[in-house]
Length: 285
Image (cartoon, rainbow, N blue to C red; front, side, top):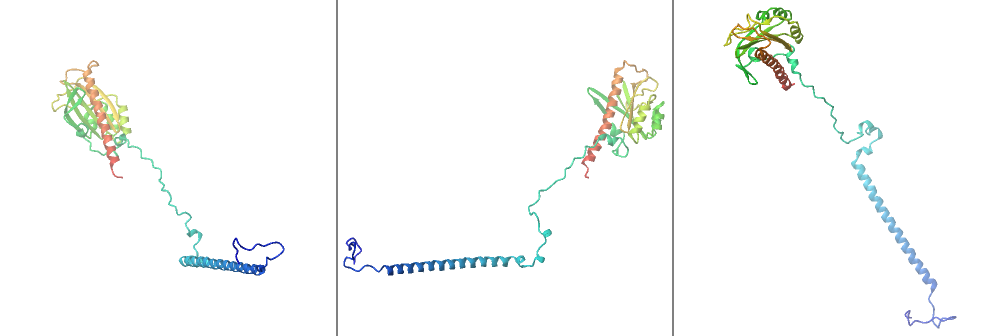
């Protein structure tokens, strides 16, 4: 039998003289093949599902074997307080700090309790001369006494004594026939020095001659000044050397000499405070 192009032609109403195919058998055989394919597919899916389930079960057993805590009863598990709520590192915090205020130099020369630097004629008035602008003053004699009144004349001695003056340091400078003696009275507190300066109205610090400076201001009229800073009160006595001439308001050279030495004394006292404040600031705490 041929199913090609030259096969038999089926005409209407007959078999063409040959036997036709068994359609029922063919249909039954096709259905049987279809059932076998369905069973094969179902069986393969079941095997795949079983394999995946086994792998998942193995993974769960392995995980439980590594974490012993999951096999423990609930009363042996860590409490909530034992479990850190946040494992992220906290940012460091720094307290705000304010630098201490700078030390006040005047504090160190306002009280004997803090004014501990060496003190004497050479620390306040070092060297052998003083230059102020174009003016050069030669340094003369110096003196230092604890009996303050003994180095004064007139009412100044009583003022120093009543305010408990502890020391009187003197130095003389001279230039072109004019000389000035500066007397620095030392007290324990600024209040006493200020009071002494305010009470002073008459009297002078005794002029100090020697070391190339002749006597002056012993019997003649001289110019005197007073001031204070911290626990120091300082006084000047300025006049002509030789003891023959009084000072008048026209003698500008005498005024200039006295003012130069008063200003220099003030600066020396303030430098003393600055030096002690600087040393205290650099000292280890």
